[in-house]
Length: 110
Image (cartoon, rainbow, N blue to C red; front, top):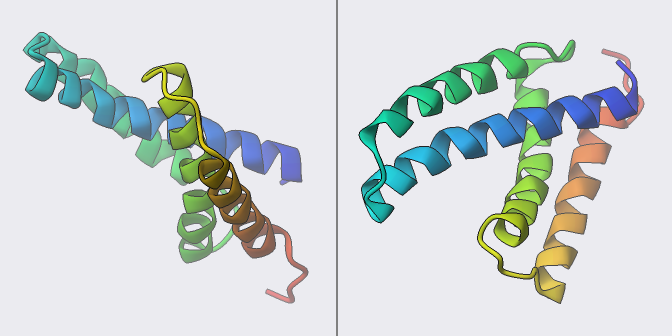
């Protein structure tokens, strides 16, 4: 799988997870409709399915996915919550993405 496709798949996976967790938050903390749990559940099912699409060892996928999840969460903070990322947020995101790249794209024999 190409690097761009891998990162894109991780980004879509992270978005599915974030939406799946954000919708119950809206119900529990913001008093929104309980019906938000339906698309939330569907989003979390999509999240799990998307994780299965990577052709490498599952432990490696989960470890590397975390770096992209951190990035997507910071972007969500900015786009949805309206909070601009700090320099530290950007630095942390960069470190997380570097870790993801090392885990997923380093040369290996297996």
